[in-house]
Length: 94
Image (cartoon, rainbow, N blue to C red; front, side, top):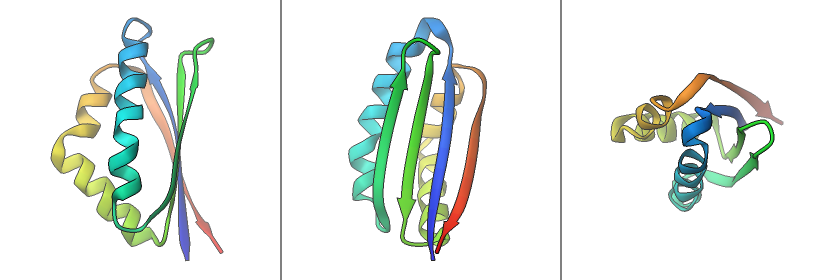
């Protein structure tokens, strides 16, 4: 079964543009990661929010990806400039 991941990220307002740019720069590596079927980013400048959507071949592929990002320090780097914790959810896609 496929796995979808959704995140709404709330960067600090004063670092919003840098944060959005960093997230967008992560897309090519995400799309190239084994098991990634789709990856998209939406940016809302009015609410200072970034929406991230990934679709994976399986929950295991998503887990491997998240571990890879964590091991590289990418997730901590993004978390350091957030005004509140992101909303993160996953869904099984039949």
